[in-house]
Image (tube, rainbow, N blue to C red; front, top):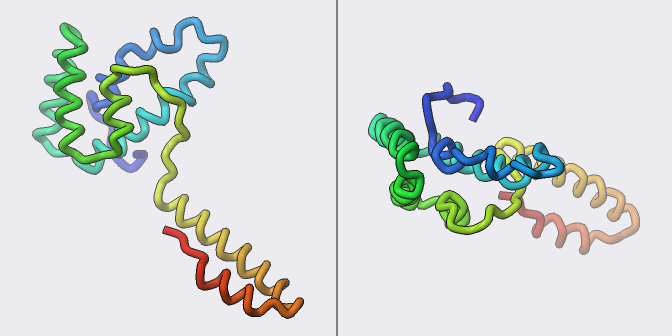
Length: 150
């Protein structure tokens, strides 16, 4: 997300135009934001980056204007757009705002996932070395064959 220049609007601007209302009255608005808004904003931003075109940008600008007059109409039109992107159905449901927002962890970038897998493999190899010293070669070979990431 940080590699793309910010624009005037995006899907999350339409979906969370009521962000202040969502956070209002919370004893810890920062925590609530990180639990129920930020994860969905991030997922919508990543989907937008994967599917952005000049036409999509124009459509989002129009929907942002529509949202001022009729947020439900803008959300319906946005829902039609993001369903065509074939993203996670849970993201589509949360973007529709027909139900309560569900707390969710933020997305893990692919680069971070690869780092996590590589660290797990290194730790696993170290434990296999220790196991081999105790003559557990069969167990070590089985674990090596069955360790998969990605």
